[in-house]
Length: 374
Ligand code: COA
Image 1 (cartoon, rainbow, N blue to C red):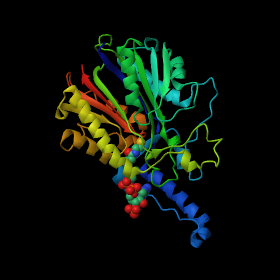
Image 2 (cartoon, rainbow, N blue to C red; image 1 turned 45 degrees about the vertical axis):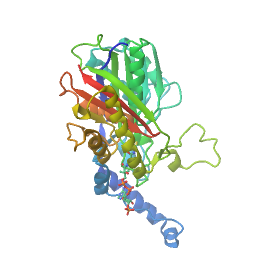
Image 3 (cartoon, rainbow, N blue to C red; image 1 turned 45 degrees about the horizontal axis):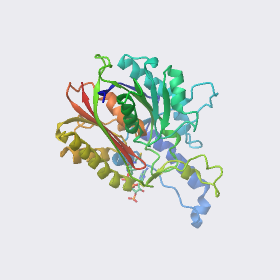
Image 4 (cartoon, protein in one colour; image 1 turned 60 degrees about the horizontal axis):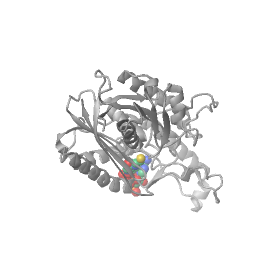
């Protein structure tokens, strides 16, 4: 099998950011308006009063301080509470592809490559712009890439699944170079009126270029892929019932049901062992002692969850060098999260250093990609 590496990464970050305080002010205005409008019914007990949110709770429960978004004004308007996006013509790049293109171009530049050098594009993310044509094919077109492309959705773990598809394609020779692109407009699937989760997500896009190690430019930051391991296990604890049959379903679903919803505590409890066991088994299979791993680029959903996973794997309290954190600034960007951590925190690794990119989320789904700096 051809030795395969990641030779470049890219990140697109939207220009606008929302702090916890800004988000909570907007949410609490919505709560006050709702409770005032429904005062009579609340008094009679037929409608439940809504409770205020708190910035302190958000930071303590999740580690999140802010999130980027494609439209701050819409999210913070208590009468709107969602990003407003200009509807684009069919011949324009769609917004998600535009974000993905920015990340893909940066990954190519870092690898010293051009669009025409790529002949497989995997758009791997949680939410798709539309069912078809696939975003990957649109991105391939605007990038000037060759070969083929397809979209794949394994929720927050999508990038890891995309890397395995890219590694397999390059190792078997069905592609010379493959891009894994993860554009996420999570604020579009987030219910900003739900106190339990209105603070969780943000928007971003990432890209990784996968090439044969001997073809990649020696001046690129190359990471040999030592192994990939994926796992899925069915759960309804993170769910989104949005789909093309919504218009046909009787009775019709409510907005609450076709946006993101979860049982956060259960997710925490069940995903931590799933992911730590996956990482320990994968490292064991490769004969790598966990303590010898220089860095874990973990999915970024909840700070305590990441610290617990890293502690279980490493056997000690993780430092920011062991498991860097980007969710304070970005919140949960779904499939992009672990790649953002990789993109921002890989330069200091020396040749021979081992790192693990690990993504996990709804499904449940989880993936471990073990890398060695070349
Ligand atoms: N502001 C203030 N208080 C809030 C609140 C908010 N926005 N949201 C919930 N609370 C309150 C609850 O009412 C509850 O109060 P009570 O103890 O009086 O009943 C208390 O805070 C705890 O709520 P809970 O929902 O149990 O919080 P939590 O500690 O589990 O934290 C999450 C919530 C979502 C941050 C956390 O469960 C989590 O991140 N889980 C993992 C989720 C995950 O990774 N999902 C993957 C998505 S891809």
